[in-house]
Image (cartoon, rainbow, N blue to C red; front, side, top):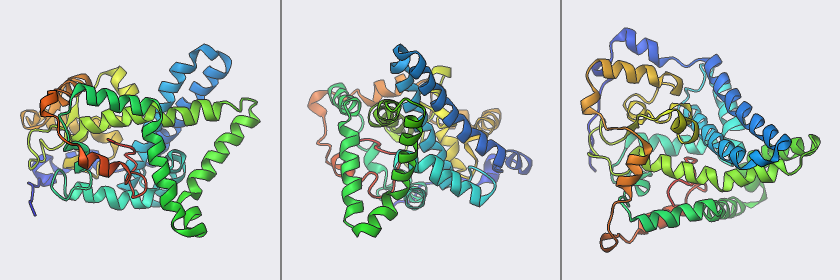
Length: 331
């Protein structure tokens, strides 16, 4: 079993600097979750009153659904809020369940990814190993995402896995997601706009959400320079404002920083990044200027060099059924 390098927190930051970035905040966590749902509500309201903005609302909502998954990810680390009870409440019921995920099993799965990042037994390795791929292959993946095929396969596997547990097991697994989605549907009906739920919740979840999750997953670990170096087996993207709105909400672009110190809350990662840059760690880190540059390199394989892609196919049916809501991630 290979062992990649480890870095001590004290090798990165001083005690006072660590104190400045390490502590979760109930107010910050509540604000992030409220912000995600506020943006979703405003986008739905805009489409209800000005129907021609519905396509833009779909993109905004799909990106905030990714935001909910990112905040669930912080809750899985126990760092969304200072209070453990509030952390798990928000993470499960307002972040995970709405996108049909489950906090507790995701937590176990995801922490293994942190312990074994980019190693042979990393449960996420199949998401990065197939890259680079051809542009034609990438276009096919995006087409499956935007036509709902990726989401359909995931949901089919998820519901089938839950059904195999019997009636009680099914509702234990799927109950939170079904309940929250029933509330969303009921709220849309009560507001007099029943179509908001299928048109501006389920449709983004089955299309744009899948696409931005895929791009984000490629950016995090695909074609990294060194699988054994913690500064270079993940990637930080210097995302611009548009990219942060559409592809990288809630500071998820600071992925090297997250892997170096995974107990730093997402809302403190910009501060950690600034400290690392000031200390001269920049040249050691895998930093990229944009998501476009990563996608360009990740789709640079010539047709004659294309791999079989078996690992990605095997992984596709395990998504959601097992534990992970970085959801749908690479297909």
